[in-house]
Image (cartoon, rainbow, N blue to C red):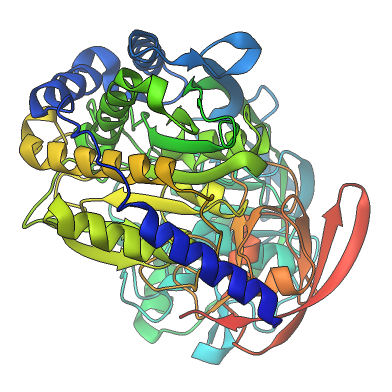
Length: 612
């Protein structure tokens, strides 16, 4: 470490800490509980149908925000001189026309009887299935779990190379979330295990121990959209019964035996083959961010930008794969707190700053992000395609779920992303905020500010906490605390107003990783590589959307935009492969990472860091 940068940071911090005492602020009296309530009632109305990205209701919400930005006097800051910035994303998955499955079942006479199964009736591809054609001998591999370190391995003594593996859902412990094998029951994990064992395809079947129903799961998608590397389908147990009976067993006998003994009972089926063709189609849709700007007036700093943001999308009608915590109850998820509360605060701030636009020193950019619930897609798109240069963006303030203030508890993330933030938040709270502020150091967290932090923009994220209505249809406008909502919005206004008055731009700092930060690649793991995935990409590999400054990847020379394709000698086809490998590593362990930078294949050695 050299002395000069340290002195520079200290000097700027001192200047910034003193800046707020100069000049009196105009109280943000225009930000009222009544107006916040009306914005929330509109955005969280049934008319907007939960504002799911890519839906008509979401488009209506975007149009409402455009209308409010225009009324507040904001200038267009989107694409082609408009208020919106469009991007494409994967909205759903559908069956293509080329799905077929034929089972060849041996008979007593030595010949084979062919059973042709119907797609969407007898079998259905899983959402992460590769689209391919394969043929191979069928092998029953129990639950498809390989955990020799836990004393259980369905693949022990089996050669499944080039074969089609049939497996049960869950584990010998059933669907027990606290079971020792639970982490290995995820279907993507089972597909990865089968692929690494050399299997050509995976047939999943719901065992009779799970109940009498024999239904196919919906073809839900996840935020990766990347294929598992092998065809993977679910087959009804009734459709597989002839194959099992031809070999003198039933699925119930096999499952009961495994569950009772907690020991594998994997068996090959000589002469039985499966010919499988999968065809999974991604349904693309478009969504828009909404952007407006108030230009700065001070010639010295008018080109600098303070970004204020909140996402306006939610879960639409819910259902499986939506993120709803009531996935079996299709209903409009109005998302009043998540995040009509943040969006309404953003509109009120736009109106309040619009009233004093002539006195703004810096430019203030207002961004209503879309598709946050699908993996920060809108903010990731913006930082990759900024309409105002990120190099001139001096701070980003994000509001997500700010409508349920209780016992004055306000959480502020990003405190350590600039040396200016701690003293600023502490002083303003002391001078009139009146909150019990919980400060979280990290700039990476579960909302759109993370996208900016990974581009080395100082961030602050305001949040009033989770509650029982989170991601449920019950998150409606009547449940918010609008007096508390007003207090939070006015406090955020004061923070942004103070930053506008800073004599020098706030310095960026690399924040430590904390357990409270729920983002990046460290959630649920002992170690971290220090990267944020790019969920907008569905290409093979794990694309890095952002690098945590000072993290293992940063030290190894990796950059945002690199695509990890191999780690520790194991192939990485998607984010789930990456996370599975991450879970096997230890702090201090050096791992070789192979990645693509454009078309160039590169290698780096990264030392895994302990999650703090």
